[in-house]
Image (cartoon, rainbow, N blue to C red; front, side, top):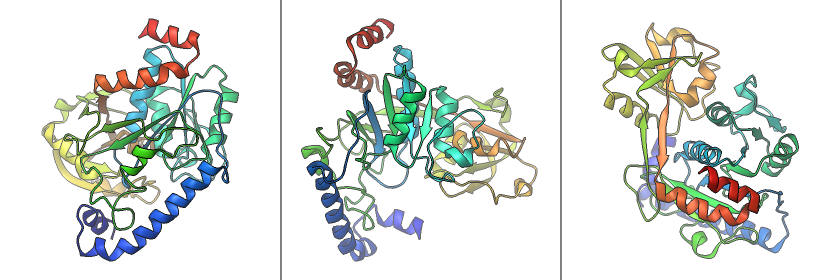
Length: 346
């Protein structure tokens, strides 16, 4: 059913039209909720440092986690100390938690664990992102900016910069869930803004090869190596000709498999698993003796379970113009000392 909906969301066919009345009700509820936040009926918390929200307007992953990682690394290169907050989709429990190297992925969620592993930046998860942000600042008072992984529609925390991420699907058929992929109307929000005290979406970043509409572009490719659990590297060229079992518990597994094949790897078998798959029920014998190759997101859950797993990093880079525009938005939000220090180290 999920695959059928994904296909239906690309066009205004029979199934989408049948679901259109429900989508209009969804649109009404979304607008009522926005207005409630704007009028102050629902509270929106402000924290003491700039908050940058990176999220999706469409359902199904569009590549926001690589964007978060790229932004953290960009700020780190400028000498700006950044932290990350997230809801931690799919994790056990709702309590506020700092994601540390030894934190079980079941408690943190796979994407926060990957962000922590990739950037070494402080990462906190909580059901309410404002609670996570306050806990992060209390534990790490030197943090100068917070990046919120997902949460464009989570208005309970006020934000200073909003970044919407799209892949090559764009907005699909342009209808809201469940008739289309949109979580909120587009581009209506970008035109009038709904952020508490703010302007709305500031930057649009496309992660696919072909941008569906105006916005900044990016490049993405697999690294020329895979990683073992201990961090050591295996050149991909050394795997050429070996039969491999490719696993992917991400929103679009086939895209990962296609990238592996483009690198010249022979995939004896592929396993497309649900996004955020926890691997608790995955039998080790299912690999049939093949070397298992997967994404870094899957690896944070597989490494503690299997020794024959290799993770292939994704090398993702927004266009330089995106970072220029981002820096221009962030500069007036930082203290003079921070802003000056950042430009000196850029």
